[in-house]
Amino acid sequence: MTEKPLFDIAHLRSVLEKATASGSRWNARSLSLAASAGKSPHLVRDIIRGKSANPQLETVLGLAKALEMDIAQLVPSTATLMPRVGMTGGVEQLAVVGAVAAGVWREQTDWAAEDRYSIEVGPNPVAGGERFALRMEGHSMDKIIPPGSDLECLRVSFGLVEPQPGDIVIVQRDRHDLHELTCKRLDHDGTNFILRAESTRAEFQEPIVIGNPDEDNHDDEGVNIIGIVLRSHQNLFQRRR
Image 1 (tube, rainbow, N blue to C red):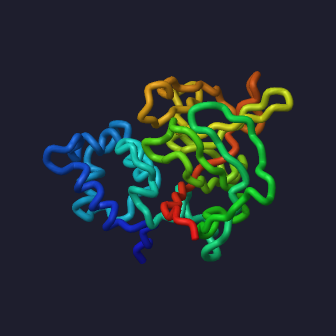
Image 2: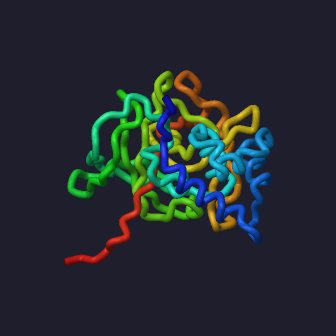
C-alpha cells in the first residue's frame, strides 16, 4: 500500500513550478542543490514530474529554507513541522500566554489570565508532547513571520522532541533570576549551534552562537532551546463591533 502523503503534494508542486519558472532566481537544479546541501540535484525535478509523490520532511524543510519561506506557506495543509507521530484529535484551543521578541532577548513574563487569549490549532503532532503559544514581537524574522503573529510551539523534551538545524526555535537565556526569550532559525556550523535571523532589516543579520545546549549542557549564560515553532497564525480580521 502506498503511504499517504503528509501534505498537499499538488500545492507543493505548484510552488516549485513558480519558483523555478523562466526568469526566476532558481532553476530546478540550483534549487535542488540548495535545498539538499549539494547532495540531490534532481529532487525538485522529481517532485514536479510526480516521480517523488511523498518527499521526506527534511526535503521540504530544505526547500522552505532555500526559498526563504515558512513551511506553512510551502505546504499549508501540513499540520506541523514534525512527523505525524501518535497524532490524535481534531481542532483544539491553545492559550497564548506571553510574547517573544524576534531580534533581541526579551524578559520572559507570563501574561495575567485576563490578557491571555486562545487560538485554534490542529491535533498534537507528538503523543505526550506539550504545546504552548507565544505572540511574536519585533522584525528579526519578518521575512517569514510578521510581527503580531501567534506562534504555535512544541516544547523541547530531549528523548521525545529534539531541535534540529533548520527548525525555527524559541530560546531561553537564564541570567540569575532573569529569564529571557528570543525566536530564531537554528543552524549548525559543524561545531556549534547558531541562531540566525531571517529579517528585512540589516541590524538583525549578526548570528548568535549558542554552543551545544541540551538537557545536560548549560553554558555560562544558561542558553537552552525550549521550543520548536510548528506554525505561525495571523489574525487578519481586525474589525471591532
